[in-house]
Image (cartoon, rainbow over all chains, first blue to last red; front, side):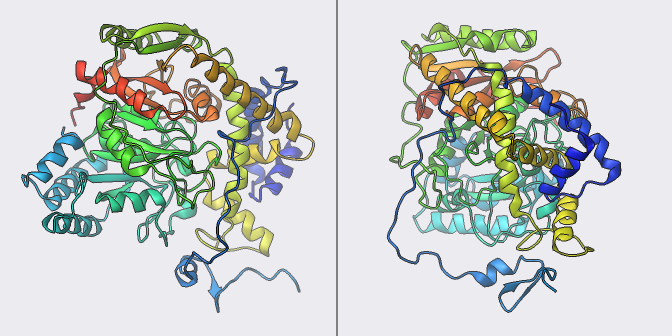
Length: 95
Length: 481
């Protein structure tokens, strides 16, 4: 499996990372080397093996339905690039 | 070079105050950090305020065993009021608004923060060359890498800039820098140390742990760091342990397994010789050696380099320039803001892993890559379970070679990934493991022995490491700086 320049552009777009035309070829080369390494595992027979998503058998704990976290909105928004009236500001999405 | 055990005794006896101790370490950091680049942030005022509080606690009779002992925190643990960069331009302007549980626990124990240790960006790397703040130098040889991703933590302890350091280990990021810097480093069983406030890379693999000169000191720091935390959904509901409890047990009857795949082609001769000498020493101490097999060791590399990037691509989607961190200055609309913010804020290794992760999770490739990698993860974990039927701990090298030269592999990510062969399996299985220094390679750089324990077998691993350190003095050797 080898990625074309178009594939790399598409993956970059899905990842929301701008990759310039000048960076595209080097990125393609590196990703293809990584995929080549990864491809070694594709031939392994894993029929009947349960996928392991986690180091232990995880289960979701339940707790009392009670408020535990204090309101720290001001502190959390103090590190935001742009806020107004307690809201995060982003560029206009709807005209 | 003082151990924490010695510092703790000196503090208790009133031979030194926490403020004096902090001043000593801050002076050493000021003198040597320009050479080593082990710290991203040092703030003497904050450190001394914590030290004064420790001295006040001692005067009031409320001091604990470690009150006043200095610690360097990897810059991945959010600490309120401290810049928490994770080694990235993305978080260069981020002052954490809350404490990670590891930080909360360290404060409760009275540890004094010396500063924030350098690291590979978002903990992605095996050489510490991927930091936005520049590479860390290995204290044993300034031309060598210190290992990664917790390279700043390991270099700080090795150079005597901190007696304790925290770190994280997703694919070897505590054990490998401990090995390269000639100190002791432990990664506990997945779920033992809370991940709350620890900036996520690959959540099913990330685990916090400790660096110090000795196994005994690592046990002391792990006592502080570990414990159930309901703020971490994968925290183990497990009774609090004293990790020092078995340190003095004799090794007679302990069975150590040597996986033949860890001593096969690819292991450098000088590393193999140091490991074999350490095994001989353990036999003298009464341990029995058994041959075990981890037949799918090689598959840990592709499995890890699918699973970790997949989880990273999801975790790092939070860095979008909206709620915290870097935002691009010029953009045209929301999508452009995201794309430029992330292009500017992330370095290339982080971008490569996000791109790889996005690809292996994308439609049509999920089964072939991600699911297949998770199945291989199960096979690797099962191999460890089978091996532990025949032994109490597994021994082997941490890395195939001693520390390489700065720049040697920085243009070749795949070559760097291959060097993780002996550490990745432990993370995939969720097992505990540590590294202790056992000698030097032909280039004079340290060699680490990896001791892998069974699930929740930290006390047994630390016992083996401590007994080795009682009989040898590799851990007491210090670089000349």
